[in-house]
Length: 253
Image: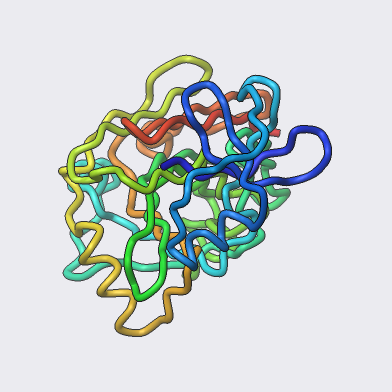
């Protein structure tokens, strides 16, 4: 099942994506369905995907956990060291943005970067309820000069994600890619994750409550702009895709 939040012109609604259509649920939100475990098929009005605007599946997630340095090739390209345990940081709920953006460059930064990531979406009892695609947009100049990454990683609109939540995927070996203005920049596979999805959930849950709807961004493969000094500019269009989970595409503003 693919759970989406969309706007057909009269406000947000929850629905189930089926092919090129999204079918409305007659009540409740995507978060309600994740929290309850309800997988009853939608039976409301159907809309063509081309005629609606997809929103972030959960507009304001209760928490957004992120994992740094979780692909060996990405660690190597930045000259970093492999962590002995998962490196966890947070994005703010206000960083959540629709899959179509826009992503706005913060006034404090002039070195904006992209990071395609597999997203784990939590359900009850520390179980993974589904998967999605995210771009962990990063202000590299702030990340280099500030010991804490709050401003570098958690600024408003820095977490476009979606396009929906897929509840029945196998995340063990999926291809991840990023294209900027049609040019491929990243190409990796989730089988190369150092710390796997279940490990990440258990590690975070040792200290933090994982509420239904919480997100875990699992890390990015190699090919980021920081490695080449090529940063995003206003007007650029970034497309991040994870095999079987869909793609998000958004402008930089």
